[in-house]
Length: 574
Image (cartoon, rainbow, N blue to C red; front, side):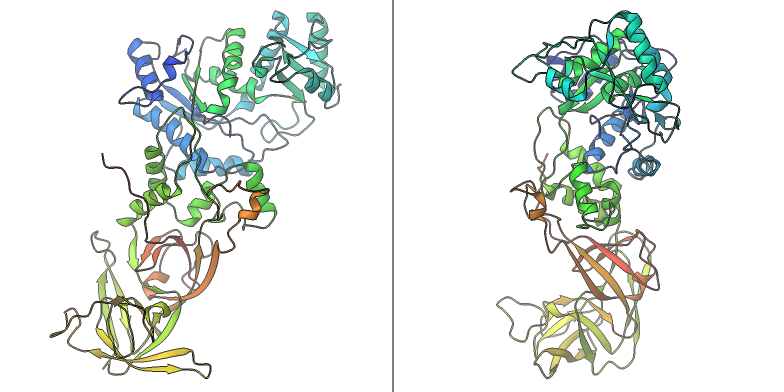
C-alpha cells in the first residue's frame, strides 16, 4: 500500500490553506494523538473548513492487517471531525493492477464498517490533468525528458554518501523537451527509452529529490482507461496531485514516506494548485508472528504454502474474515494500538484479545466433539430434547439439544489412569454432562490393541438441572448425541509462523508452522448445522468457531476455529 494513506472527496473550492508542516507540529500532545491534535488546531485556526481524508490503495493485491489501521485512521478521523473520506485507487501501474483487486478492496472497506464519500475515485480519472501539469512543468523549466538508459539513471543518481550527477539531457530546451514528451505519449518511443524527470537538485542529501521520475513509458492496457495512454505517472507524482484535485486536507501515511514529503510539497507548489494538502506520517502497524510484505504473501500463495489469499491463516482482510475475525474486533484493535511517530511491534495477543472481546456477547453457544469417544448411557429411560439458551447472558433464543442413550464425548475428557488434579471422567468416577445429568463410568471397553473405544455409563436420574445429594461432582464435560448429532469438518487454525519475528534466519519460509492447520472430523449438535455461512459460535470448552464462508452447508457443515478460549493478554487498566 501507499502511505498509511487516506483518500478524500473533491470539494468545489479549497478547504485548506496550511502553513508548511514542521517537526514540532507532528509531535503528539497530551490528550490527543498528534494527527488529531493537528486537525484540531487546523480547524480552530480556520486553516481547514472541512476535514477531507482519503484511503488510496494501489489495486495490485489484497488488503492486509496494516491496511486496516490505515482505513480506521483515515475514515475514523474524517467521521470524528465531521468531514469525509474518499476511497481512491492509485492505479498508475497497469502491469500490476486488476479489477479483481479493485472490487475486493471496496468490499473489504465496507465489511470493516466504513463508507466513502460519493463513488470510488481513481487516479486514472485524473490522467488528463496530470499530463497537463507535466507539460506545465516542462514549460516552467521544472521538468525534462531524460533519454539515458535505466541503468545510467540509476548509476548517476548517486547514493546516500555520494551526490548524483546531472543528466546530459537536463539542460535541453523547452521545445526539445515538449517534442520528446509528445513522442513518449504517442508511442513513438519504446518502453524504457525515455522518462520525464523533475528538475530539482542532483546533489540533494535527500535522494528522493534528485530529479525524481514523473512519467515512464508503458505500452500496457489499463483496467480503467484501456489503451488510451502510452505513458503513466509515477506514484510520487500522481499521489500528491490527486490529493490536491480532491481537496484533501490531511494526507495521512506511514513513516517510510517521511523522506518523500519534500517532493510532495514541491510538486504541489510547482503546479500552483489552489488546494494545498499536507502530508503527515505515523508508524505502520507491525504485528509479531505476522508478515505483511505483498511479495512474501504472494510467495506463500503461489508456492502452495497456504490455500489462497483468503486462507484463514493469512493476515489479509479476506483471510481474517474467513477465519471469523470480526470488524468490531479489528477496529477495537486499531484503536488500542493508537497513532504514534515510533515504529514498534504489537503483540499478536492484543489482536486476539480484541477479537475474543467482540465475540463474547455476540457468538451463540453450542457443543461440538472434536475427538469423539463413544459413551452408552445404560439406564436412560428415553431420549430427551433438552431446551437451553443459545447464550447465557444475551437473548438469542433457545436451541434444542437431543439427549440419547448413545453419546460422544471428547477423548481428552476421559483418563483410565488420571494425572493429579484431573477432574473429568475416570473409571468408577462421576462427571456432569453439560446441561444434562451426572453420569458414572461403570465399564471401559477396549479393542484388541488395548485402545478405549467405548464407555458404559449410568445416569443419576435425580440430577437433571440440580446437584446430586450427599456428594459433590466437580467436573463438567460437553457431549453430542451419537445418533442425532451430525458429522462436521472442523479446521483448527493456528499461527502461520513459529517465530515471533518470521524474518528470523535465512528464509522466512523456514519458520512456517507445520501444525498451523489440522482438519478434524467432529460431531456437532444439530442446531449448529443450521448456521448461516460466517455465523460465529463458541463451541463450549473448545473455543470460538465460524461456519466457513464458502464451504459450509447444512448438509455438510464446515467450521473454522477462530481462536481458542485462552487469553494471555492483559489490557492496561485506565
